[in-house]
Image (cartoon, rainbow, N blue to C red; front, side):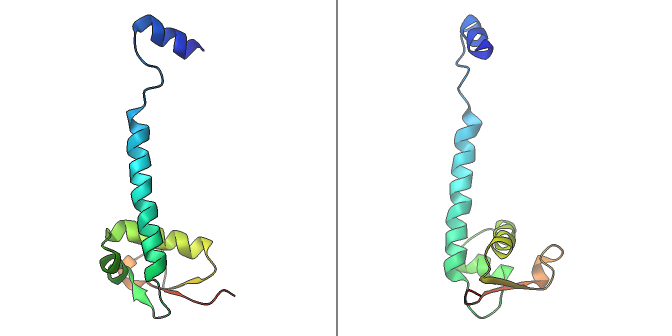
Length: 97
């Protein structure tokens, strides 16, 4: 309430948050890349660079999304240390355990 009252006094919209819209657009792009990566993962191990190329994504975002998928999806396997060198890691999909 106090924020709304103060905003009215100085004639601004207290709830105008341009960063929120930018965040929504960025999140939508990352989620689209996550869906594309999920579809691109096969049973053959692939590097981050290969997967990034196959989905047309940024390698750093690809690495982050793949680490997230490996941590949250039982079907994703990682070979190598996903926290150190993205160039030395491969990802693949397996049948659900």
